[in-house]
Length: 147
Image 1 (cartoon, rainbow, N blue to C red):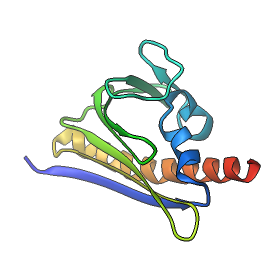
Image 2: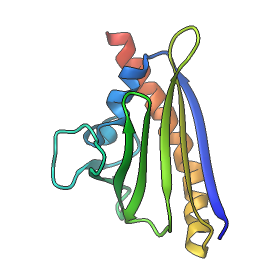
Image 3: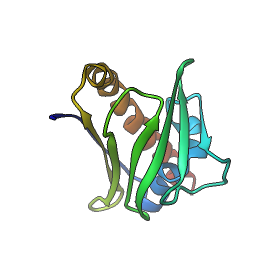
């Protein structure tokens, strides 16, 4: 089956460790991003580790539950959707790369099966992913400026 794909990139003036502190802790997502709430099941102080189950509330009705598949601190985290959004074989990756001369390049990608519901999700995530990366860049820049 073919796949749908979303990919967004951004660059922040912050070091990768600063950006990582936001990306790797589900408890902070509602502070810097477009989510209403987020955390871990069971509750945990973070950061995300392989096998961690994290959840995010987006809007009034959408709650996404995700499982962390891979962590390479402070440069890469891979996760899959366990439930909450109607997609099959969802796999997402956030990659942080040092930028030249300073800062961090952020690349957030996701792919999943091309189903009827997957197409609906695709239209929504084409809007949401740029908003997420923009918010991550802004939060990282603010944090870096305060250090």
